[in-house]
Amino acid sequence: MVDGARVPDSSSIHDTWLQYKTRGGRELRNKLILYYSPVVKYVAGRIGSGLPDYIEQSDLVSYGFFGLMDAIERFEPSRGPKFESYAISRIRGAIIDELRKTDWVPRSVRNKAKEVEHAYGRLHTVLGRVPSESEVADDMGITGEALQDILKEISVTGLVAIEQVFFTGNDHERKSIGDMLASSADLPPLVLESKEARELLNKALRQLRERERTVIVLYYYEGLTLSAIGDILGVTESRVCQIHTKAVLQLRSLLSASS
Image (cartoon, rainbow, N blue to C red; front, side, top):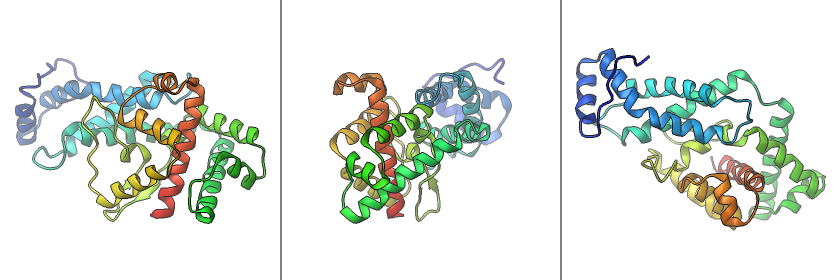
């Protein structure tokens, strides 16, 4: 795909963009692909960290390159955010689209995720706040231990991290949890064109309980791994994964109710 291309350095990347957008050509496109390939590997790594071991990282990277190529074709250097910010969403989208095509998440797990999310939504409407786990379990007619088992099952599949779109703003652009949250301290923050989306997300984050909000901030905004977050909170990595799952379900419920 990029045979024979030479990677441009940071000082010449602007000129490479200008040349490519002026006259096009495979060689210039391949230079851009090589230069931004670390972004693909980064996004694939973030998504892969929440997926089962049998999902090959190399496959995720391959899917992501299709998103990168699409981003390169569509990006206008004179408009909008930095390319990295623009590309992250399209790379993530390409990976998620391919994962959905494989339909590797059991229908029963998807249904359980929806049940938990709907329970959070119902209780938030009644209580005017994010409900506790015990309140959610009572609403679903199950024990707290059973709810924990469901959250664990959902988190193991990585379902919530790559789940369907949950918000459509005034610009009619559909956004996922990954699109709306910042990506990493190492990359420019994702610039959201919709002011309404930013305001709704910030409002929803403020409604989360402290531990759930901490996990979201450390994972999406600070770029920490689940293992590192576990060390900070004094819990296991699997427990952090469950907290993350619960937090994203809560955010989905809150944002769905607001859109």
